[in-house]
Amino acid sequence: MTQHTKAEVILQVKDVALTYDRPILRDINLSIRNIVRPGFSQGQVVTLIGRSGIGKTQLFKILSGLQAPTSGQVTIHGNQPVKAGDMGVIFQNYYLFEWRTVYQSLMLAAKKNKVLAGMEKQTIEQYAHQFQLTGHLILYPRQLSGGQRQRVSIMQQLLKGSNFILLDEPFSGLDVCMLDKAVELLLQVSLSDELKTLIIVSHDIETSVAISDTVFILGTEPNKAGATIKKEIDLIERDLAWQKNIKQERRFLETLEEIKADL
Ligand SMILES: Nc1ncnc2c1ncn2[C@@H]1O[C@H](COP(=O)(O)OP(=O)(O)OP(=O)(O)O)[C@@H](O)[C@H]1O
Ligand SMILES: [Mg+2]
Image 1 (tube, helix red, strand yellow):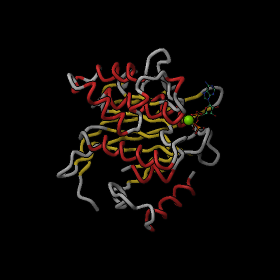
Image 2 (cartoon, rainbow, N blue to C red):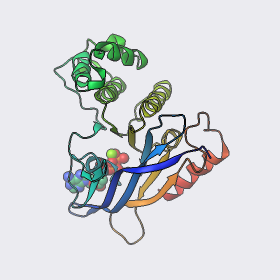
Image 3 (tube, protein in one colour):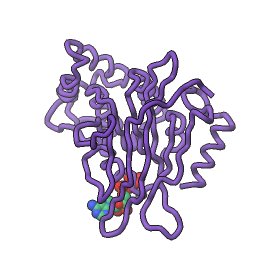
Image 4 (cartoon, rainbow, N blue to C red):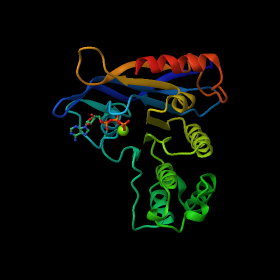
């Protein structure tokens, strides 16, 4: 197992439930700890996996502070209740400012990040190059493809620099080549800061397991209404975290099978 320790809790979900006309989520309890890895500034990459319609996006909104649960609470940085704006949020539908060019939107995001002061333009150009969007900076969102909108949306949140970045289905709609690039970039971001935490909501099991240190499975249990966390898988313990080229390895494939059986 790669040497590491799990230090303080940086995000905690306690007894969260969400009910509309019927229970959607119940008894959601989970915590994310700061992973300390000697010699690395290692951030956290956590994935929430579940079937379509199970309640991932609802939990995503609760985690981001954009929606209040029916009961229970989410706290970050010790014991602070999470509030809207605390986290960088990348929605499933890639909301963008339609009346601003890509560059203007990205500049607005970069200006919010004090760490980038004086280096906003340079950083935007660097990201744009990495994401193959250099020629698109002068365009408006309506002139972009779905995959391009998604990349702009990811860049926007990366530029803002919040410690927590929530991504709802970041891998859908990307072609194989862009998928590898997105994974690479997210890993790079997670390594950029000890406290940087990516929370990915996805039904792409293979990509999620390959990128994460921890997987939470959201699913239902017999005779109980509403979805809950059925299992937490520590990929570090299984020696599956922080390794490239594990997709062919047996223990990786076995973990995928285990997750599928739990969905
Ligand atoms: N405002 C609402 N009122 C009532 N039910 C809702 C509301 N919003 C969502 N739901 C229900 O909550 C459930 C979970 O929806 P959610 O969008 O979280 O699913 P999901 O896991 O993200 O699915 P997908 O993978 O398809 O994105 C769905 O059954 C949906 O019908
Ligand atoms: Mg969803």
